Length: 344
Length: 290
Image 1 (tube, rainbow over the protein chains, first blue to last red):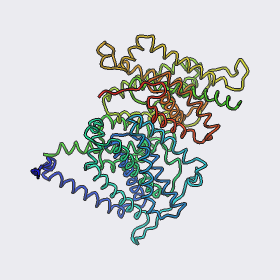
Image 2 (cartoon, chains in turn green, red):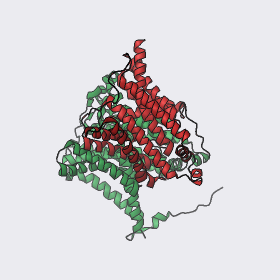
Image 3 (cartoon, chains in turn green, cyan):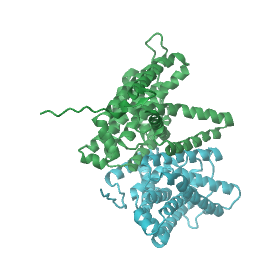
Image 4 (cartoon, chains in turn green, cyan):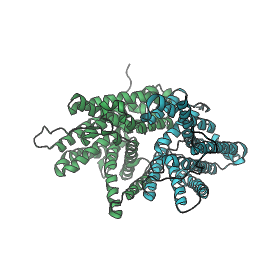
């Protein structure tokens, strides 16, 4: 028995923007973005390359958080803990067991997947705010755990662990550029992974859980399984970001992974756009550049006064509230709105 | 045995602080169904206001009262200005705003009063009228203040018309509106009360931990833990939970894990309670109708 085949056209495919089909615009933009990302390291200073590498690291972490919050609708204020777990896994593997840096990324991700999955299991019972609370506690407690004296043999205690950047195996790249390409490569893999994950059956199940958990359950979706696996995958992404971040910064210490890192990731996600994969990249740029920029502005007006630096955060919080009011879907939502205005 | 007694009493004293904060957390939770992650920073900011008034020469109790009034109005203003427009927005928006408020209060306090540690006076006499080395006068004072606050809140909800209206607005906003209760006003009132209770907590804590913008994060975690242990639907439970957290913290610190893992201990308690008894010890189980 065969079902009649119907050919359906996605209406979005026939829209035009300035006379060009929308999907073609998108492909052109993605190709342009890729070329820009590949060429940039040769055009800018080493310090900028270093910053862009950090942008990529943050983007991966924001992407991880976004998979959890944007697609499954669960909150986490504890992703700094997973970031820390990934960073420390990589650092300990390098420091204690002489593993080559490239081979620490995957184990860091796997450790965080397991950690996320296990933390996600209680998450089945914790809804919304309770989960936010539990993860908040996790984030607040993490630096203390890392500092704990009985783990000092592994974690290096308060001092943390020093790492070293890998040398570039390619003759015409310096180590900063090489690291940039490495992070970019990993990031691209994860991006495509997230894209595929959210666009298929799994993605639809995740979104169903976000939009109406009860209906999702009625439709036969194993909500508990999806929730904890998503928590695990989200942990995986953030852990990989943590490991890469540790290598880029060449250093891990308990105080780099405070609750405020979680706040940053959350801010990056909200500003970039909930449930938007490309928004994660925007979020990465935001996390790195906006504080630097506002610091420069404050310094221009107030000089080096340390308490004036606090003003940055006041401005920042205000900006965040403003974002929630004006562009609740973040930059991605803004772009989507603009495109909606332009298409014919 | 002496050590045990001393640690338990000391735990009750810190527990009183947690209990006050837990009370504030539960107040807001009752009114809006959310945790206020900015509660700790709001309390810290209120305490700074009181400190400033005292530094300008106001007597302690005048500053205390003025601080309560300012916090109450401030809390109402936050509800009216910031939360009212997004009342129907998804939970995430609320969480983001709580986080934003945390940043703003923390940084604004640092900007106005700088990040140096400040001493905050205790309103209680320096020596107790009877002789004991188990508990200090300020600690005993905190316990007293907590119990008085709890009594006042209980009386407010139980015996005043406004308290009844607030309970109605929280339990069933639609029906409350139908009988003529202004749910908007009740929400604002809930925020105001919570801010004022937080201010009391802040002013009681400050003499113990010293006043600085970052003093609240750890305490807030214990306040949350207290609220969760006692049950988020029960103010009395929250107070008992707060006291329990104080005692447990001290006993676990003395006999089990040492002082280095206190925050981790709070994490474990929160998760354990949420896993095995999500409604808390004294809370009501909320059944959702589909």
